[in-house]
Image (cartoon, rainbow, N blue to C red; front, side, top):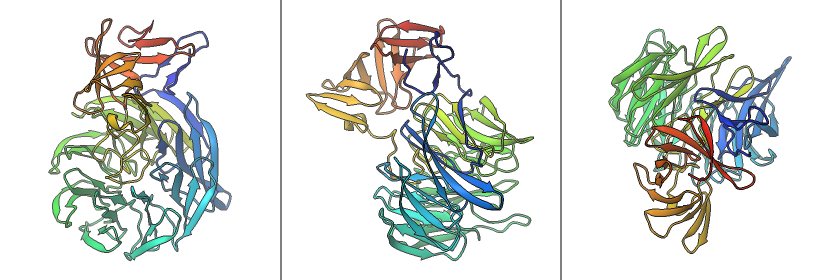
Length: 498
């Protein structure tokens, strides 16, 4: 039978497919090069990531595009720069162009489909931080030459602002177009959308520590800019004027960027090996000993589970999953050091690049949280924009990833053919009548005479939650058009629609 999701593994030709359990490895892709930055993602089809290449005395960078639409990834294209690439690639709002900077001082725009260079913008310093991309297509590029650049989609310069210090902090964009980033001399800089200074905040100097700001600021839905510093503090500043809301002190430098949920809770990790949940006043809710965390950042999924990757010693790292109360759900060991932040696909696959040159795909089970600032650079496309929608966001009635067929019929990519006349009741082929409701506007309940009440969302389907048994079901269609579902409670495949 044919299985569409790449988180399903065909174990033997004659056997039915079996879904990987949360925390299990799905696949690996080896490059032989060091992976430092986070991977970006277009829907479930293409994964982009960058590498550092050292060959004798020469060094270069690579951009990889992998086709991940099947259960094993295949290479679509690569692009080579003249020096290392540590930055994470960001995507244009329409997903057609990939943006990334390099140690060679160049900022590249690449065709996302072919890898062909569309244009290059040259700065006078190396580029380590990742670019931000606004919903209007403006690209924001920080450089170690002390300038912060705004570029048009065609690569021409809109404006530049000199801040007088190295910028290794990836910028974030607020709803009003304001830009926030840190500097190596310990300032959090806020610029207006036209490049003029909005405000600055200088962090405290602490004996024995560096007050650099390498983290990428998170912007909470409560209007606060949250970031960590090398001085061991996490800060929350009022976005409107830079006033200090709170700060929390830890025992070692903080270069891991924070993740923030919809309630303003903050998840941060330190090099001292501790992982914290802070409430929206900066008060510790719980902590866990996880191992050293250098630059990799926490991630929150749409069920509130939290993920972090940490250094465990002996050249190994561990990916850990926690529930919102701090209980460890699972862990997975990787045979390499990891500095890259995690990304999470809509089908529940975690993507992690490592120093051994391998991109790892691990089953998580759920998609990325749709609100707040759930990860490094916020969204799947790593644009760092609070106001931009991601591939998971948008209301059902707008058919954000489908086609309005007219006469109240629509084809929605994540769900299929739907009849929408009796709102909030919609008719789905083959599930039958669905009720659009629950905590989220894109959540659905439907009643099955065979299985009782079932629940699903854009980020979980074709995984469906069965209320009566508190278990999950995987729903699929084979090449002949026959429907099947796998019930994880009974560990059996069943033929027929739900």
